[in-house]
Length: 240
Figure 1 (cartoon, rainbow, N blue to C red):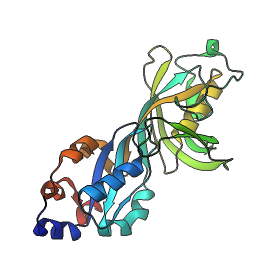
Figure 2 (figure 1 turned 90 degrees about the vertical axis):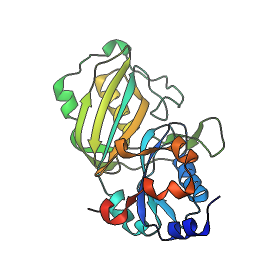
Figure 3 (figure 1 turned 90 degrees about the horizontal axis):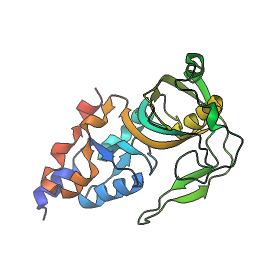
């Protein structure tokens, strides 16, 4: 059990915590769990992360929340895999398959370099109307109707493809905030003529923060309250 000195120290802790969120867990569950377990006054985040995605979640402890705009506005990087020849209403593997006019036989790997270039630079995206969500405490994904969305403009700095394995095509992408990875994959699949949905997604970077420096969520659950501060980045260092 934590002593009063440890609790007092955490009250004055102004820091950033990098968490490696597992796939299948709502990001809000991570935020609430960290706040409750370590008796913190205020815990915010520097950008949400879909339940189906894994990777870097930047948590802001106490006064670090005053700098949320700096982190929210930072560029992001992702890695993952798209499944070719499959389209869903959510754009990812947890949605319902769409019986649309796409042709698996049209798959060309690697795609023309000119096609890949079309998905770099300024790109307009429209978020799918439906989204796969996982409520806190639920064992299954639910399909939520989020209504029609307006196109948004993002800038894709880099978009690379890896070596395919069957109908799975690995990718890496770096872009400005607001990138909708499942929309990017869906649009790319349409452009290829075969359709595609997001199979896996992992956020690897937010600004200068890397998932390589993050604490796995499972390890946080085993952490004693007296060891918590040593896993964080002091605010002055985090903002350099």
